[in-house]
Image: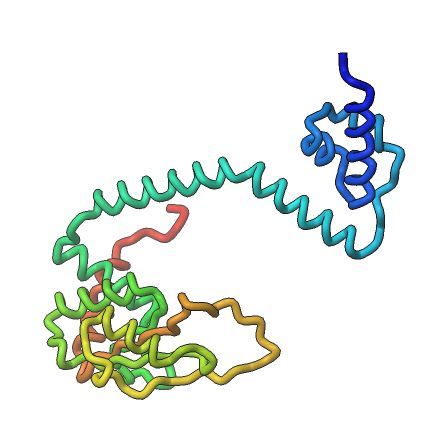
Length: 236
């Protein structure tokens, strides 16, 4: 049989927690009692409606939600890591033809293209913030016979970032000295802009330009034409 004094103590704690803005399920969990018991004790007591209590309830709700979904998120993250590792292992080493086709495709999607008003401006210039795409592009131009001395590197980054650190990071990735980089392009700060690309992981974009690259540009056009010719339109 439950000691009445013990139940009175739990009741007093329930009332105190309610006054602090705790919900019935939260109180039941904290005190180790059934939800029906907690509701019988404090269901008639309205939640405080001041700003401090609302902030406390939101914080508590977030803690409870995070705890509820923690297992799901861990399982999801593990499944993602396993899938990425298995797929990467399947890809293994790209063959020459695959590398050329993929390289031309990513350049067609992300690289600088000639404009209708500048149809003969056929410079190969690839700009991206993704180190994996930068590395793949460098492998592509090497496969196309471009010597490393014909590559020009330049960082484009927000002026509030650690510019020298970013340049060092990109230089280490592509395997050249920071002294070989061209002057950095700084993006001016606009206070009204809500930027999300901040923090230690922000390194701006790297621009890779190939000197005397018109013929390479034409080859990329030809590769894309070859892949596009004979492909039926969607729906056929």
